[in-house]
Each structure stands twice: as structure tokens, then as C-alpha cells.
Image (tube, rainbow, N blue to C red; front, side, top):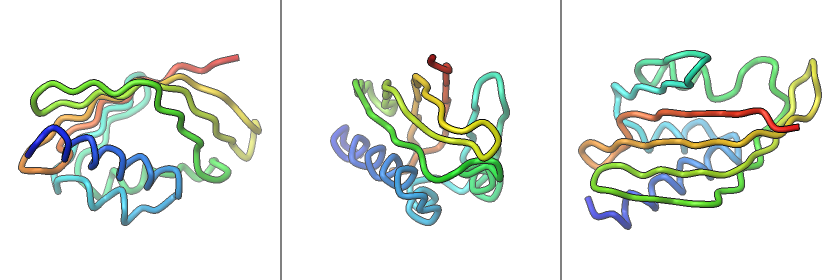
Length: 118
């Protein structure tokens, strides 16, 4: 897989999150994908990943502003800021860094680091 193809797949993944499109997101992943949301939870496999895409307390899809994309071999790293909302607490802002590791042309591991912003 070329580096450009990996970046396109990450873009597709992010667009899926922006649209709340589970099928679009899941199509970018290996069956045994691991998603580590550091400090929160780890999911294994597409079924668990699907359950974490939108938590029951969320209100709508997040806005994601990617500021930087770095690539090295089978790894793509994105940084940026986002906005979302929860039913209980309303709107919130966050900074993120997400590391995507690839295998066989798909995303095999996602490491997400999320920091709340004022």
C-alpha cells in the first residue's frame, strides 16, 4: 500500500466519523482491529469498535479539524481539534492525536489520545 493510499483511507475513516456513518468507518478496518482510547478503554474487533463509535450519551457526530498528518511506513498520525456534545453536559472541545497502524491495506490499530479543552 502506498503512503498516499494510507492517507486517503484515514481521510475516509475521519469522514465516516464526521457523518456518523458506521459502515464507512468499519470498511477501513481489519476484522481484528484494536482501538486504544488511552485513559478510557480498549476495543478489539469490529463489533466492539462499532459499539464505541457513538456512545449512548453523545449528541450527534463530532466536528474534526485535522491540523497535521504525518506518515512513516505503515503508520499515519493525525493531530487536531474537535467539537462534540453530550446529552448530559452539552458541547465540549478537545484536542486529539490519533495514530493509525496499517496491515494488508486496512487500519489494524488505532491509538487515540484525547485532551479536553476549555
